[in-house]
Every structure is written in structure tokens, then in C-alpha cells.
Length: 115
View 1: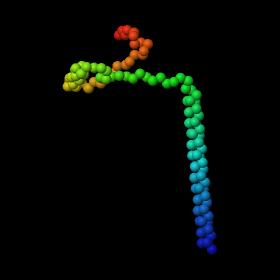
View 2: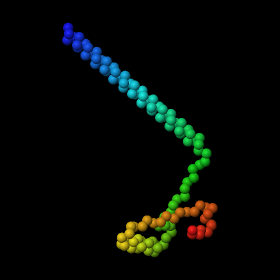
View 3: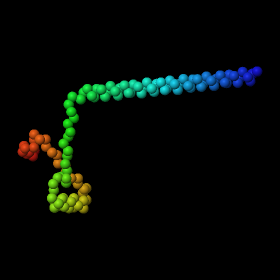
View 4: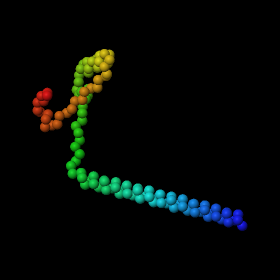
């Protein structure tokens, strides 16, 4: 008799534990679903704001050209390579080609004086 009651009590405890675990899992799933939905709504609202706030088109920046890519004569290129090699032999670092920036169109025909 006692053993039978003990078995029933153990079975009931296991059932209760399973039910509690299931409800916890369901609550976690619901919580995660709410979070995902909130994130999705926030993302949509952000996209809408970005669409509405675009009043002017984006301006592309002018490309920066390196001096090696401009129309240099082969002789000039060799001289610069030799200078680089001399600099490396003296213990210096290999120099990068300096960047040449293109001026905006409204400043291209102006004279540029050094500071």
C-alpha cells in the first residue's frame, strides 16, 4: 500500500515538473516572438524614416588618383622606382605614391598659391 502511494506521488511529481517545464518553454518562445516582432516593427519604422528624410540625392565624392596612374612617361616611372629603391637601401620604408586630389570644377581655373 505504501509503495503504491509512493509510486503515485512520484508519477504526479514528474507530471507536474513536465508541465512546469513545458509552460516555461512556451513562455520563453512567446517572449522571443514578441522581441522579434518588436525588432521588426522598429526596423520598418526606421526604414520609413530614412525614406522620408531623403530630401537630397547623395553626392558622389570625386575619385582620388595616384600619381602613378596619371599619364607618366616610362622614363619618369623608372626614375621614381630607382628613387624608391635607393630609399629602401638606405634603411627607409618603401614610400607610397602620393595621392593627387582633383579640385572641384569651380576651383579648377583658379591659381593655387602655397601657404
